[in-house]
Length: 103
Image 1 (cartoon, one colour):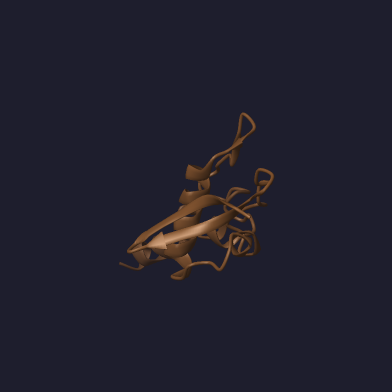
Image 2: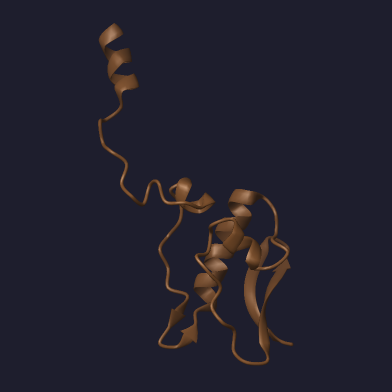
């Protein structure tokens, strides 16, 4: 019995990988999925939306804007929106989405 308790406390002996100790809330929780937010010069709104949903799930709140995702470590940086547009968080009943709106 003591041997089993000792093994449980010792863990598997696996050293954390660099991604396990990466800064940011999502990375620290081990839930962040590496994503590309600009593909072939176009902003991937689905990838941004997936990250927004991770943020809402872990923070239990809707961000005021996408800068909150950067400050919390969920996004490395915001991609540049197309000229004359900005990012907005569209939300309804249990539905969150990143959209582009005209300024």
